Image (tube, rainbow, N blue to C red):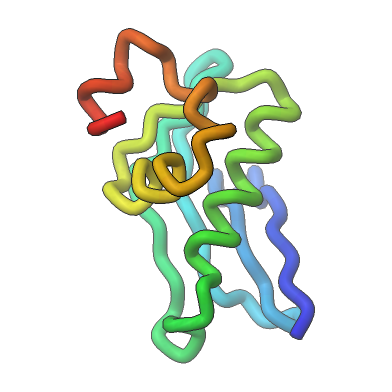
Length: 101
C-alpha cells in the first residue's frame, strides 16, 4: 500500500491517496502564513487504517516546511498534535488554549 499526502491548492486542501486513489483530505483556508484547518475527511472505504493521522502529519510537515502556522479548528487535528508534540510549535502560543493544546 502506497500512501501519498500532497497539497491540492486549486481545492484548498491537502489530500491523501492510497495506491493512486483519493482516500481523504483536510481543507484549509490560508490567511497570510496561517493555515486554518476546519475539516478532515477520510472516505468510509479507507477508515480504520490510520490514514487520518498520516494525512494530518503530512499536512503539518508541509506547512512547517513552508514556515506557516496552524489554526486547528477541526477537532481531529489537535489530537494528532497532542500525539506528535513536535507539531505544537506550529500553533501560535496565544491560541493554543482555544484548541486544548
